[in-house]
Length: 141
Image (cartoon, rainbow, N blue to C red; front, side, top):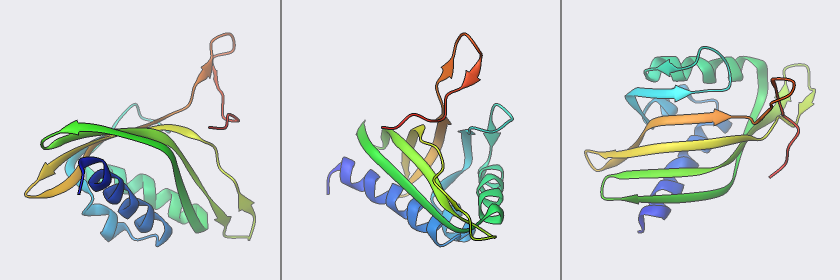
């Protein structure tokens, strides 16, 4: 199996865990000291518990969760890999309202520990309009 396919497979497990709303499964896919630069404050979330707290917020908001990852590009060597692409959380709210979500730029840094890949850093971001200082959330990949 190539490094690219191994990383894509690992990120697929993240998507499966999100769709199942399974925090325990997600916990095993991140390093315990993961640093996440997510779209919501603060500037960084440190540790797997902080990362899972963000996903728990998503799970509380959505009755059904979906995650799509497009245009994934992976590079790396040995026990370190970097992937980037576009991600989108979507789903159905508790009241039945469908939500398309917004596309974000997604970056993942993974390290192989004890023979298994774990995410040690991730970042989700949106471009912003320099003139207004506001995020631009309606772009499509």
